[in-house]
Image 1 (cartoon, rainbow, N blue to C red):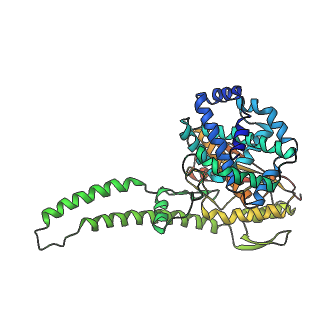
Image 2: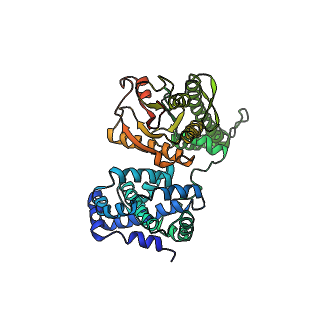
Image 3: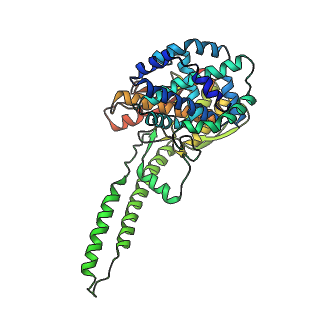
Length: 427
């Protein structure tokens, strides 16, 4: 049956579990049931979107061994009442970024809206759907009936029935596609880039406040033109001219804001020193800044004295996020690709990815953002081929500052993503 996976997974949820989950989230049981159904369909849909990727499916099946299924099945009532924690929490925090990448929070928000839930409940339901899906798959894996190939076939068979459970376009491959040049400029006006651990403050960008004044201005000018149209001595500027000029002004300001941010990032990255070649144990050669995190990390892993300092934390220095968001900008890809290559060249190494903020704003919101950013970086490294079993991601919010939060420079230094080598160094 096309819906057999959905039916089997949702059949594992008892009425008592639904009630416990509703009580924990503070939501109506009926809304929670609807949201959990959507979250389960979204999770299966995320897997189905990559059903043809054998490497990805191998990573998923790699999470299912060692009695995972029995452990998850036994703990489902506890997960419903108190949420995932400990080893199960770590497993869920690995699995969800693998499935959704940087879209995890968008998916959670869509689930909340679809079911009429509070803003935070969608993520809570995803974190319940994840162990349900994993428990079902692990049970099949333990019985010997699930392989990488059969998992792909099951997901492809299930996929057509899933869209009926989901908000329109939730898992569309069009999300995040690059638009036209004009759309790119408009997007630059709507967001400023935050430079992580680069000491550069993102310039605020203009938003839609241009639109209404431009429309009013156009109407006023049109009225003025009607009055002045009888005068032969002055050139007439049409409403179309004025609207075009207003649009050009907004575009120019947007370009200026984007250029200011880009130039600031360029200056900060230039301070990382000249480019140098770093050779990895697998023979690959990277071209990296001499003072950048890649060269420091390789030196540490090779056992160079003092390369890691007193601890084993290394701060990424060429990552860009949207302001206040967990969305990475394209300029981050080079460093992420380099770090992924390094981790793959040192297969014995295990790492923790830590997200940090300054102390501005609400501490709980900062903690959530730091976790989301750490999850995003981990998801990107997984997508580049790093085994998720070698990584964990944790948000620390405004804890563990490395500089004075009373100064702007200090706050900039505290907004960072760091990587800790927790196993496998050569020292």
